[in-house]
Image (cartoon, rainbow over all chains, first blue to last red; front, top):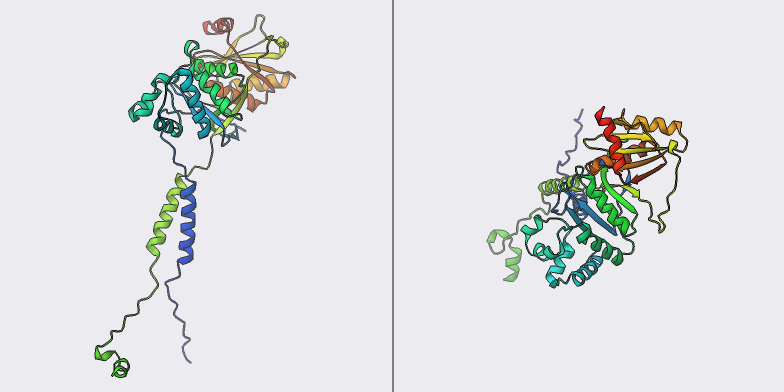
Length: 196
Length: 169
């Protein structure tokens, strides 16, 4: 009886298809990845069971650090440009186009207007910002929020506070918001499992 | 003569036969690299957005109109230092008690009151020295226990006095 011949198959397979797919996915992930910008303030948020998600656009984020430093962050470049224009005319500080561009690209900042120029100038100063003044005699945060609300009609305000912040600072910020007739406030939290 | 050259074959050294190189390349390293990068980007991408808790503060009215609630239906929660929470019903000579944020603490109290009192309302007052975390926690507890009516109020010196009666005992 003749031996059954098993046809020898080549072990090298065509990897073109797999390669195509791999690169497609790679491109997708590369384009969707948003690297977290380096922020001058570290905020460790408290957790809650809330499941609503922060909207994408028109958000004004007020970050409050552990020590009570208040930072301001607005998305929307056009709105930011307008806010800066208003602030510079109110406080009599002028900015060069380069500084303006830097300000628009910055994710958040927290310093008195008088020091804003310095912060925009050097990286070192950017990392050591003292926070925006919120006391009633020099309430700069109010102006920032006011101009932001004017520049962006659909503005939503989110408060990103640190777990360990004293409530005093938070209540002060909320009072400023209420003063400006902003009564819906979004508190940014991290997820926590719901108890049974 | 030309015919001879072309027809003569390679042996004569006139034309070199180019070696046939396979067009297939080994793509394994490329695929390896691609998958490595995919894995990296997949792991660094964060799809989950931060969660938010929406708080609606009462709208300021011109005439500062105050709505009155029955004292027997209203509980005041005072957030104190070191994760303590004080609670009392009503305002006239209240019985102040203190508890904590654990499952057996304030949650039990809120659940029980919410069950027994139909129009249960809670007023949250935080001391200046309490932490932001406590505020978020208490709002969480309110959502968990399903209390319908709640408000964040301003603390008064009287509230602080009341909490001191507990600390002394």
